[in-house]
Image (cartoon, rainbow, N blue to C red; front, side, top):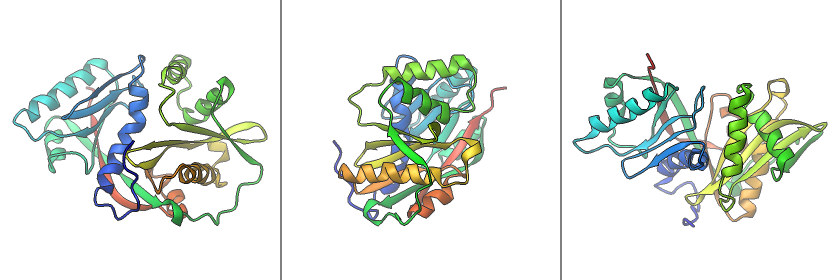
Length: 267
């Protein structure tokens, strides 16, 4: 177990936030249904997702073979004919890695913020949405409900079933806690707590479109953060979407880094 990070003044916090992002996808990438590489030079996963979430999460390409390794990764994903993203954050080197990626036909498409909060400074003065109940995913029913919310774009049955198969292949010893929130017995929101690297990583926060704007994502995130605090963690971290940024600010999260996003041209 990694040493517990005590507060947000830790000088390595930006790198930890960045690395924590990979830890979430590593859980899926280590299953037989996916592919993954984790070495001193690169960390990438291929979930064989036809929409997103395949790509490189950290890189240490300071050697003379940098361009060769970039080409190897690009060739691999082009051969798979699937979308691929390359995230460049504080855990990646060299500092001008993005320039080299653009020279290899990757396109800069934006950035996503890495955020953190001290768990004993959470803003908990937030009204709990009326009728919301939260369950930890423990069985077949809650697992299916979880993915019905988390993967609404993936209405292609084959892909959804493969993701459920990945879930069943995940090492049960991994300290990973998935939550699903219900309104009138209908699954409407999700979150994931993945403690690693001495911090509590929050991932997989999603709400079905018809239930958004009611504070459900805020509530289920707070639920996960409280459970992390009960486990002894002092700092919560996450990588935020544009939609979730205000939710996390409301809970007390602050931005500590940004992950630049590059996408591969498939044609």
